[in-house]
Image (cartoon, rainbow, N blue to C red; front, side, top):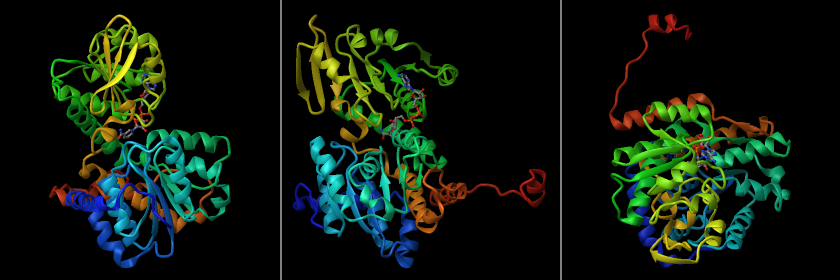
Length: 413
Ligand SMILES: NC(=O)c1ccc[n+]([C@@H]2O[C@H](COP(=O)([O-])OP(=O)(O)OC[C@H]3O[C@@H](n4cnc5c(N)ncnc54)[C@H](O)[C@@H]3O)[C@@H](O)[C@H]2O)c1
């Protein structure tokens, strides 16, 4: 299979980046150590569609060491790093991705990667599964199963399963405790602000930061914004999440109100049109908008363009939309996940956990895929504990053990 990447000469810097993250991914190092010897995936083919940066590359290489033949594509046009893509090609993987690809190229890449005829897939957002269930249906009978990395993809999968149209078992890796509790909350919390700060080079302290969505990502985004000194305002549609935000000490109000006072807006809902025309019309001069939800539809960019008299890039990854009354509104990273499109994504220590979940989910499918009916499954619970134990050990953190009497008292045996 001929890879499609920007430039193989970029590989040295890709290798350096992968080397760096390896230092901080002890769970994956333990996985690599064990399964590169036993090679459970020997003879199996995989397609991985994920944000193509260093941590993902390390996981893809581990699957290869464990015996799999791997084809990989990006899961967002702006999150692919061309040097990483080049390094993976040098390491013998089939890579179909380049930074800034068009929508047509993005889907062509997924299509090409599927020519490998995968046994197992890993998806992020649902585009790979969608293509398998539409254009590439001939590949369906061959597939043991797959796993899905993010909340939005899990929503799409559950929709497919509900309609009885899902054709193979999928593990909602996102819904594993060791994923969402850390990746969505602490990972998105830190990396989103890293993306916003390196893009704007501005102070966060003292600003009114409006965070839409108080799910796992929203909680992380709000926690870290508060730590940076922002006045945090939450918008929500779920009364329970809203009351949780109130008791966490945040102001909660509808977007119609928040739009008038926000300095920085951050969407983390997985929903569409969270910020739209009626909100753009009342925003303050200089208001900035960013999204860290999976798709670029949370801020309605076509409406923003429509109600603006001009649109121009004013700084790398920042566009200015001038309003008829002279106000300037700013959009970061084209409304795509700001932590990946304008940053390096989650810290390596966090992806260590998420990719531990992905590896063991794939292993579970390898061993049990044929026994499972097409549906959406959770990763087996005991794997969460196994990943947590390896991580704790690597951090040098010891915990207590239950005594026999305590186990009996808690009715655990
Ligand atoms: N940037 C990243 O690296 C990253 C990482 C993980 C997840 N994600 C993506 O982030 C998004 C959120 O994920 P999550 O795990 O926090 O989901 P979640 O389901 O835990 O939370 C989403 C929250 O948004 C709220 N919401 C929905 N529509 C809304 C609206 N119109 N206004 C205000 N609130 C609204 C929901 O009530 C819910 O509380 C998803 O698209 C997910 O795929 C991104």
